[in-house]
Image (cartoon, rainbow over all chains, first blue to last red):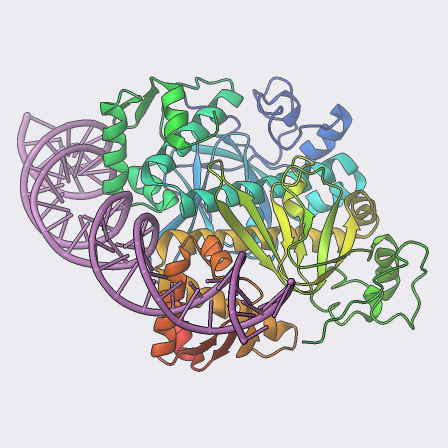
Length: 252
Length: 252
DNA sequence: CGACTACCTTGACGTAAATCAAGGCTGCAA
DNA sequence: TTGCAGCCTTGATTTACGTCAAGGTAGTCG
């Protein structure tokens, strides 16, 4: 329930300063999983200089929309976002959920247009990383270049996992996989792996997993009946991780 | 039917030479769609120096396997490949088909391990691009770095389209979309957009589109009955592009 | 406070695609 | 030529999930 909203104002003129809580990459508690990973502290400062921390978003505001000119990629600092595309017949395909420390917007690089829209699921703080600056810096810092290649590659492998999930797995398996994914990502951020609040609606989950709301809801009910997890509105508590993994059909 | 197999032997000692048919990027007829795109001719020569053209693969041979150490990305020069992952319960998820001029293997960057396997669907010639060399060259040549970022981003957007296809579209729409995709990619290579031979089996198509063989077969029969296309074994002739597009549910 | 709205759940029913089963091509090898 | 193996097609049946419908709950605003 604690909402962090560091440096909501004064974004440009402000020089980074140690007393500004969480205002730079060097002291951000996410720097073990975010873009600065694997950079020396000198290099982190340079990265820090190009990053803009101007934009706190309210729930359901857009960070960018499909078709917008591509200028930057973004790191989520707090809160959660969804990325989605609208199909020709007006339905919504959610292509990913993004939690603190995760980067979004990379799908805009190929055409200089954002290929999807990004919407805040709750109050969100993001770091904006102008792409041309990132490119220049990447040329100078091999570690950064490599890391960014890796981030993009990771996005590819994650998309491929989703492809497999959608194509081969049952509704139960899909929902279980998502719960495990969120759990894992939480624990990477030193949060509880067994108890958390879902930032997205059932509809969003359905649109991500290729299911209807009704089916998602039924799966949750089933899981609850089987005492695999406890669902109370958006609050989730995993009671039996092993059973959940088994349900997700993930090897051990 | 003409199978091109330039420089099948003598791969290392051989210096590129104009008389070696299609042995370098500069005179490769694919350089308008492949990695060299957007490079100056001086730069192309440098890229050319790091590329190895050693490996002709026979049908059903592997270029790499899931879990192999990641060393290089590959450009298809002739023939076609499929990339696939094996799920925990032993089924196969095809993650992509790769035609001449297309790059595969980028999913290995994130962990230094190939995240999928790549298998030749017919006799295939590839260009191997050692990744560390590509990284170094990218630092020196901003255009190359940008182009490679774009290629990776393109892979992401294509995966996202597949995600949408799997999650939202019927069997008819999926098969129609694949036929259109192959048709488009053929025409980019100056081949017929309406008549081609499928390099992959019905099973592969099913494993790509999240369908069973039977369903794929039935869709082809249906399309044939509707005179949208003519199917003779693996030989496809599109009779009614507009109807095919309509069936694929792609705007106009 | 009540009432509106968005979101979630549950049930009954329908359907697209999977599964099961059989048989027919195609191409290769002896 | 015959035989075999892999691939493809077609039909009958089953099933997981979608659709339709109704009602419940939570959060919000006047």
